[in-house]
Length: 321
Image 1 (cartoon, rainbow, N blue to C red):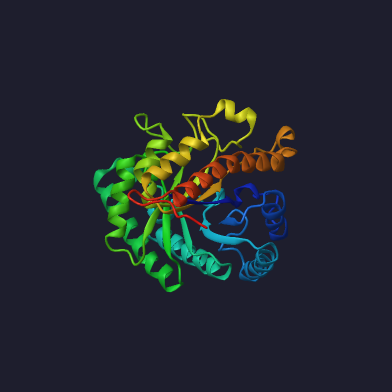
Image 2 (image 1 turned 90 degrees about the vertical axis):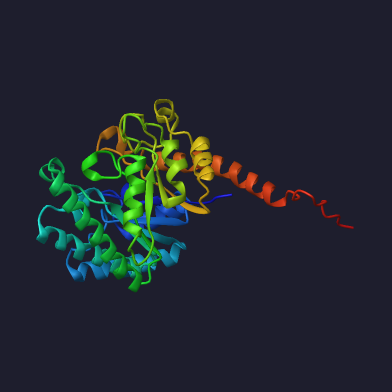
């Protein structure tokens, strides 16, 4: 059975809990989680070196204090840009260097993977078949080149997230499989998928469990959010939003299990708008979301234990005298 590791992306910290002392304390003392997906919303690798180094040192101390593991590095709201599909060669090289700096930060805080969405094409590039093919081939090559840098840094793998519109790529199950195959044909280490239960955008593939069943074995991370069937809402898993949303933990875990993946990280990716009504409920919503999922994960773990202890076919239960 699949081993699930529950954690959180630091998107919740954003402009509220950006200090390492705060987001680490909240992750451990308020949410009681072990794993963190580090977000560039709290530290961008291109910020001045002196500040980046200082932030890394503070983060190292906090991770040690609260016994937290940063498993992965991920882009944030401010870095949801063209990335390695930038229409200009200089832009692509700039983002390649940005990724290298992100990996460098990751090695200093214990991460063993990094990722983002694959990239975003300009309207001009996606509208021209020749330009589209050229840009995609260049993007694949740059990801493969980046994988060599990540391997030298000691990373286990890279990953890209399935997204919502054609310009961001991997917006259908078939396209995600094809991109995965092309990337890994010449990569220096595995380039896996990051799935999101709120990213089932294609009109014929709106069921998130379809994506999990068919792509889960190629993934290392699943982002958790409550959402409706038409948009990626990033709602918390509270009574209010669970009535509105379509994401069901039981069917989500079942679909991931059915994919055959051995281990996967489940990271909450929950956001709140800046409003009077939401400011005071951020931490409460996060805690409620963790508690909600823990109930389903407990049932899964109990089933996992039962299966491990069940006598195999053709054998007799051990008799202890």
